Amino acid sequence: MKFLDLAKVYIRSGGGGAGCVSFRREKFIEFGGPDGGDGGNGGSVWAEAVEGLNTLIDFRYQQHFFAKSGQPGMGNQKTGKSGDDIVLKVPVGTEILDEDEETVIADLVTVGQRVQLARGGNGGFGNLHFKTSTNRAPGRANPGQEGVERTIWLRLKLIADAGLVGLPNAGKSTFLAAVSNARPKIADYPFTTLIPNLGVVGIDGAEFVMADIPGLIEGASEGRGLGTQFLAHVERCKVLLHLVDGTSSTITKDYRTIVHELEAYAEELGDKPRVLALNKVDALDAKTISTRRRALEKASGGEVHVISGVTGRGVQEVLRALHARIGAQAPVTEEDGPWQP
Image (cartoon, rainbow, N blue to C red; front, side, top):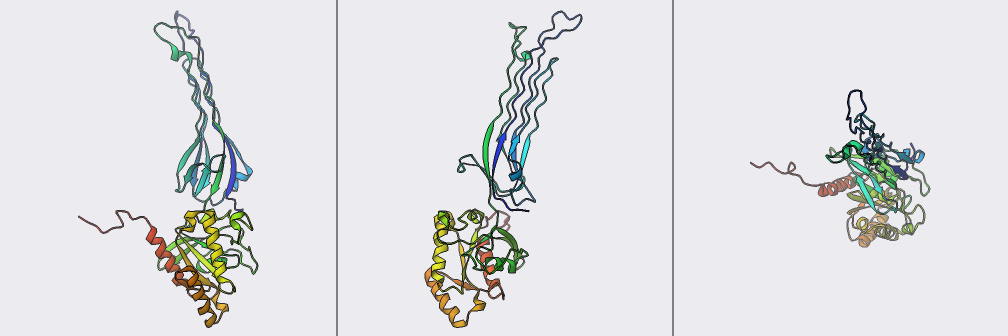
């Protein structure tokens, strides 16, 4: 299934049916009176987050969603049939934006969450509704209310607990493949990863979801390379794992490049907790590892893990550090605390 995380959709709710002007005409009934029914309501357009979807590819092949209008009222006090609603089924984590691509209409982050995007028009009143003690035979009825037509954008932000960031060929896909059952494409050239990948990671009997996004380069926030089009997928992450290629001769510059691009994309992303790791140490000797680790610790001002996605060195320690950060940000509920009488 092809991955698609942005789609433009045109929606329109159904209009209400017109009210009916009708008078009762039956044998032996001299004064029948009005009996025009109301029109039916138009169908509404809804969006619902469902399980089993992780892409918006379905909306590439169908962009128009029009709900049916309500039927007009009829004589004998019959109300017209209401139009059926239309439900747009989207993956969990989908943001719904207005046409300006900035105004957030809804953010669907839980399974079964629904939001009404366009309400159907109300049906018009029939002439029976206007009968009064002084107006026994009204000859008018209301037209139905028109439906709502609008253009919206669907933007998918994958929901993961931890996100992998780094320059191209920093070993992110290799790391994800080593710690989970995900099988992203791995090759010895830049930009091997072209779409985000998700994997479920297990450590000490616990599990969390990790997301791997395409590598960033200097100037990505200005549109270079793949730009920052995939950084939205780590916005929801509780912690970021920043991988630095240990075989690079400019590791401090590489580190600062990623930090700058994260901060340029969004201040919240730049402030997100990060775990820093020096990767690919299987290709380095002990002296080089020590020198480059100290240089990276000086540049970052924090702890630097030494790992190898190929041999597994230091991987468990990094996963424990990530899980600890994730657990530290988990909301505490009354059930989590000790029981009290």
